[in-house]
Image (tube, rainbow, N blue to C red):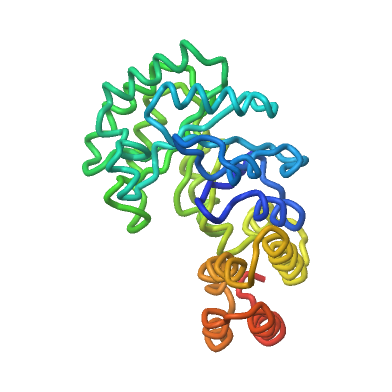
Length: 311
């Protein structure tokens, strides 16, 4: 049976989002937190991983670093809260991240990556998974990166088969995923353009041995995506309203002032709005809203007057 994971998306899929999703739609088998950087567990990161903020969910903290010392310090802190598994981010394509040889940038120095893994596996008792792209500029880089991954007993390898230069554009490089399937024994998870029941089924037909699938933007556009894939009988418009209200209330409870909450909700509608027919006028009002009351009026109009195309 296929297992489904929620991708970590910085600024979006924190614990408020995870809880609202988990309570209203088909629960994910695993939720991955937005990355914890070299700065470690600040107030925001601590709130995100606290067990009381993640009840009844399997949550895996993600770490963004190329430093063994920072990795070990962060895992020691995480262990205090009951964690024994982490994910390493080797996929973030952000220019500021890559320039420091973090995220996808770490893939440019496979020898250093190899030495990093050798030391953390020697010094840490944590179970370790990796979320990775296939290189920076050229698909030919992937073969050497896979040779590094083959050496270590990863809990899982989550592969987004795009180069850093691809960002999130264009088709995934499916031949790179075929290559890793044929050349590694580590358990694999696929990530990339799972945005509909049809796209998921098409992938699983092509790769029946892959049992784990991760999606991020697909869930933001259609929170009922996994319910669709599983063919669950869900009252989706009602659940979408409930999800939205829980999310809005959650952000309002931790943020001061309307604008901070509106920033979060507007970001969501940049994805969610694509699936409402005839909602252009309301979406413009959401974008321009300066007060929660203005925002709520526009959202009520969407739910009342516009058709959700994912029904």
